[in-house]
Image 1 (cartoon, helix red, strand yellow):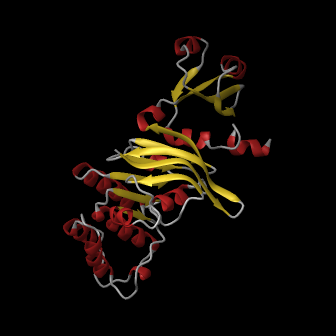
Image 2 (cartoon, helix red, strand yellow):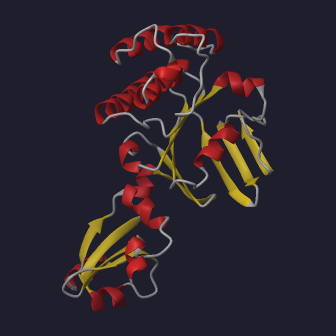
Image 3 (tube, helix red, strand yellow):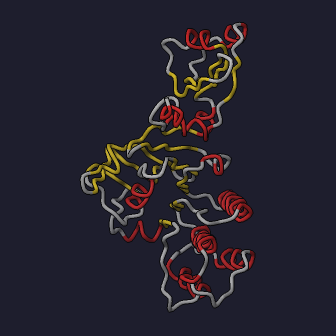
Length: 296
């Protein structure tokens, strides 16, 4: 079953297309990483899926319905980010109690255990929490809601390293026990790649790729060798990234088209895997050499 389906989605804000002809679908009970640089359109897409914003054109379906101002979507989907705002008339403990009234699958015990584990005081006010503690509290809301579609938009903003690790471990353990569709937006793929089944990469409002995580890890290879040999070997191949190194050597990242690697090794070319996080950076660079091209 498709929980999310977008066809030719466009969102225009002023003169800018923040989403430009985006088409993809997400199946139920999967964890998808929504990856891209700042300004790629990740938050815009999630707010449209959550029903907060309406697309300018194209077709968007969540649970087979248009999400904008839709009660079914509101009751079964949750959007978590660091801008969440709660009433100052309620303590954070009272906020958890009220959340249990709205979300049908709310797990009160899980919320309380996480609340205690992260050392929250029941009488604290959400507005007065530090940035990291706000993100941690928001994470508790997202996990305990057990919504069929749970969306985390840069969920670890402000968290220290230990808390980020705890969050991702808690998310994975709860997902295994209670599968649902989860989308995690991030520009740090290396932090979340072990959780993900699929990756949707956005670049300047467009879908660059949407692949299973294991396919993305094999998408490209790195080649290092003498510059003249590398340039000859990669002639007519798709070069994703290129860096000239010392002593007349060059490193390139090329799409893995299953060319004869043993022959490359005999020519002195070193073959290396390309981490998925690095690959996403290379794919969204404006130039093949990245920031180094600015100084040429």
